[in-house]
Amino acid sequence: MSSSQDRPHGGDGQFVRSLTTAERDARAAELRSKGWTYSRIAAELGFNHRADAHNAVKRVLKETVREAGEDVRALELERLDRLEAAANEVLEREHVTVSNGRVVSLNEMPLPDDGPVLAAIDRLLKIQERRARLLGLDAPTKQAISISPERAAALEQLVEELGEQ
Image (cartoon, rainbow, N blue to C red; front, side):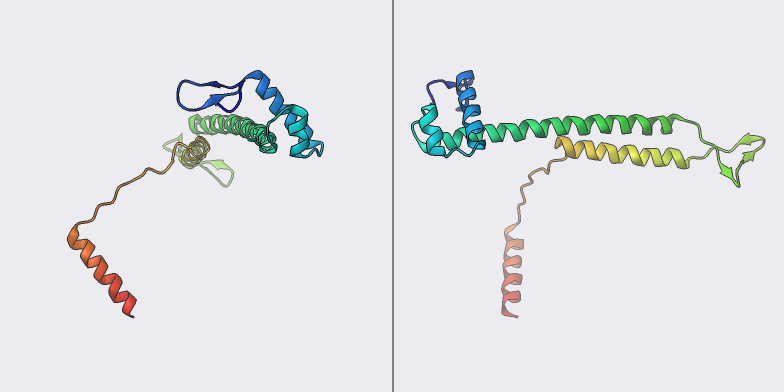
């Protein structure tokens, strides 16, 4: 184990830091931010090695970045929710065709205008695409590519011919 205060987590080889270890890591980061060397931090906090103090600071920085990233992601998702609600309002609203400041009618009925509806649909798709990217939903899928021996031979021949030129 990495420390006597750490404990195994679910048998998956990872360790969860205890509160004592987390507090010591935070103190190490605080001291480092004040310009202390890793050797001095190790001596002050009882780490066995300078590298242990360095790793403690790295753990705090990694967690801080991850938490900040999660906060930014949550904020972006809230913004996308508001934009989606506004686009849905446009989508649901009735739109009439206007020309030269006047409503265009057909058989004394206002002529519907599909332009704003289609624009709202396009905007909703862009919002959905952004949300999918933000959440990592569109991660590329791995694909295995197989090639027949005949095609492999033809490909090798083509490569050889290109190399001769």
